[in-house]
Image (tube, rainbow, N blue to C red; front, side, top):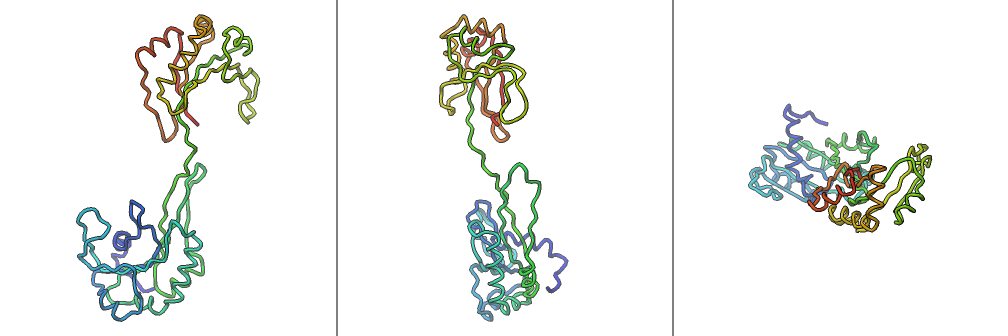
Length: 293
C-alpha cells in the first residue's frame, strides 16, 4: 500500500461523512469501497476507468443527506457492495474479496490516481450488546488482507452496537405480609385468597437460598399497563373487603404496599392521589419500591 500524507488520520475521520457510509437515521447502512481527496479529479477518473461508482461527489457539492447546508470538502467516488444491516458479516468479506478480485486492475489505478488521499473498503459489523459482553474485536481475514494489500485499499470496520431488547415489564403493585407465621392461618383470619404465599424455609426461585420468613401476597387485579395510583387503589379496595382484619394484621406484621416498575432503563413516574395516601395510613401501610428485574 502506498504511503499516506501526515494528515491521513484526519482524512480517515472525515471520510465517514464524505463517503456517506454511516448516517444517524440508519437510512444508508451499506458497506462499500470509496476514495476521495482535495484535488481528486473525479471526472478525469471516470473518463479513464470502466468502473461506474454508485455515488460521485465534487468538492463544494451539498451533502445530499444533510438537513442543513453542508458542503463536501473533497471530491470522491463510492462503490456500494451491499446492505450492512442485511448481509451477515462473513458474507460481507466474501463479497468484498470477490469484488477486489474482479476489479483488481481498475482499483489499483484508483489507489494510485492523482489526488486520491483516502482509499477505504468499509465493512459493517452489528454487535448485539448483552450483560456479559465486555468488548468487541473485528479484523480482516487473511484472504481479505491479501487482496486489500494487493489493491492498495485500507480496510475499516464500522461497528454498530445494539442492545438486545429485554421482555417488556410494565409496573404493577402488591400488598404483602412477612414474618414468622403460617400462610394458611393468615388466609383464614382475613377471609381473602392470596395471590401468592410462601413458607419460611422454601427455596427462593432456582437458587439454593432459603426464605427466612413466610410471605402472604395480594396483587393488583389490573392490567400491568394501568396507572400506578390505580394499582394501589385496587389493592386497597381488596383490603376494604375485610377492613378490620387487614388493619389488625398490617399493624401486627408490618404490612407493605410494594410498587414494582424500576429497571436499568426505565423508571415510572410515581404519583399517588391524596385520597390514596390517606387510605394507606388507615392500614398503617409502608410504601416500598422494587426493581422490575
